Length: 82
Image (cartoon, rainbow, N blue to C red; front, side, top):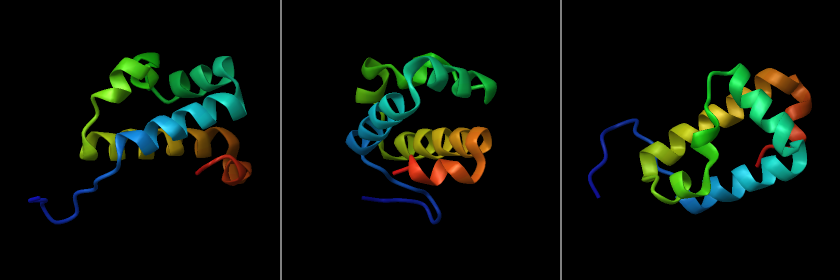
């Protein structure tokens, strides 16, 4: 495995688990609203899309969704983030 310094890797399985958990905790409608307010499109959480993520893309998606939840909920988000 050859990674550039500072690049991140994350399992696509972990990201799918995180997305499923956020959907259940927040609710699908609310979750989609949070994503849209942060310029993240519903396609990114589609199961067919998530299956094909590689390590760096999975890490970027995970960080982007966590950031969107933190911006929406502030400090209360800590209870729902994995």
